[in-house]
Length: 529
Image 1: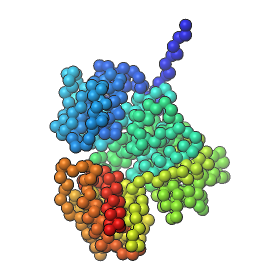
Image 2: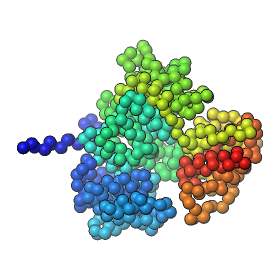
Image 3: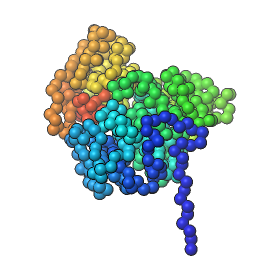
Image 4: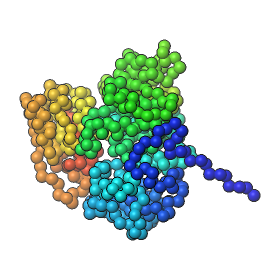
């Protein structure tokens, strides 16, 4: 008779050498959450949001026996498939704005033990405030995923920053894959983080995290983490630039191996200096110039490593060429953009931190497919180039896009999130042929243009809001078509029409991807006509 093998030991929530951080009601988080298989019977959990993070959280918790209530203010998006699956686990789904104004009363009558919030929910949202007042812990998907990791937990390589997160993460994924590793890109892109940590085949996780996701966690101890840059963003959510930067800095807390920072952005170095890390973790800088020991950088036309080689005080390891970066950026016939060089260096530093060889960095960049809505060429018509950079959702991202072209008809505007546009407009006024303003509230950009670029013609898309029953994927169609028509009227031969909104999209479009797709469709229709 053979005895069943003893269950594998779970990784500790707070590993040896890590610092346990203060977090509201942390002691009340149910211990049964630890690990992927323990029963949650008897626990009541509220999940806020039925989207990319909320749905897998609800499924996982319900599968383990918890009483789960999902609340979501949205009633427009078709969630029938998710709702059908959740119904199998007897999940209580409550959709509509009336369900997010206070803690829901469970059918069992029990007080909720935990709230798992979707990252976009602000801390001052009424339901979350009510939970805090009642002493009920509120965590997000990152904290949940960290706690449910199994015994075969894969290393976490974390990427955050104001801009460049997605490209850096996909470059990192490509490098890890080129090294022969089974990698999951997850978090803010790819697979939901909870799904990725439960994948027994995953050997390493390339994790993109937003400031929202980092805000709602406090236990994560990444193997290596990079903060690419810090610029004012999401101030309406965080309340201040300082709070926003602090949440980004959580990526470095309790890092085990390497804190990767941008030498060109002193704010990222400050975050490293202020971070509590596990003994032995190193600060690794990246720079577009010649690197010092402990850094990655550029020498002539090569990306080089002087951080992860034994002879770093006297030599450097060549990783890739600038031509490889240009190819990885989707622009093989143009010089590698500076922001993409920075992204490639950051990805390389994370990969090298876990022993990826130099050749895999090169091969990964060569295999990398540039993401959509990032300086994507839509069409060339009448000697005018049309570029979709809808992913530029803040001034910092738009600045990188504007640097790439001259002269420009700039399509800009949207949900400003408290951003200031004066510096952006002043820096690029000389290259602007005209500006086409979109957005429900165009005042912030209009004001900056009047003050900093009074000579630049400004054309505004002033249309009524779409009806409430408009298909979300089509919302903003008229805005995109009008913007393209105005841009075409202003553009001259040799110009670039650049959609780089420097603002979020949700005031007029479903999301930034839809904004870019509708723009591209309008351009192709106009070019065809």
